[in-house]
Image (tube, rainbow, N blue to C red; front, side, top):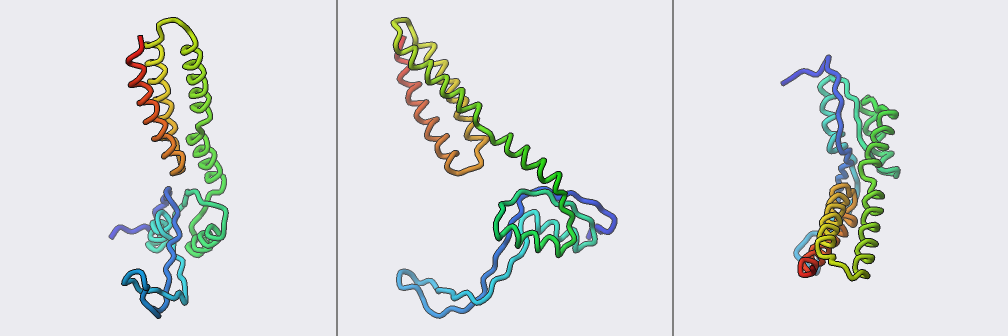
Length: 180
């Protein structure tokens, strides 16, 4: 096994708090043959990148951990487990990562462009000119914006909305191809 005694390692990743419940089974669920556990004790353990950091420290290495977490009771539990390991948390670097993450996930520009494209579609529909190719192009642009929103999304809800938007745009695009 590789020795970490003189190694300095940066560990970047998802910091997870694994929670193990210990107890006793007192009855079986009436809806299904599943035992119902009465929790008597819980154990909190570092998971994800925290588990890797723990393994590095246990091997004698020096670990700098960079991750993102919420600001709740579980964060306090995570910080307690990390402090037990003597893992160094670079607060400035963590703040920088939070800013970068916020910038990468910002979809304001895409929303503005979608609104602009939608306004242009409405404007074109009120004209008597040939608009088929222009509408087709706008649908391509709107689809591109929806793709970008979906890829930047950090939430399940936004991802689902982006997919629904792409479906609707594609349906409109099919209809637009019949317009000259």
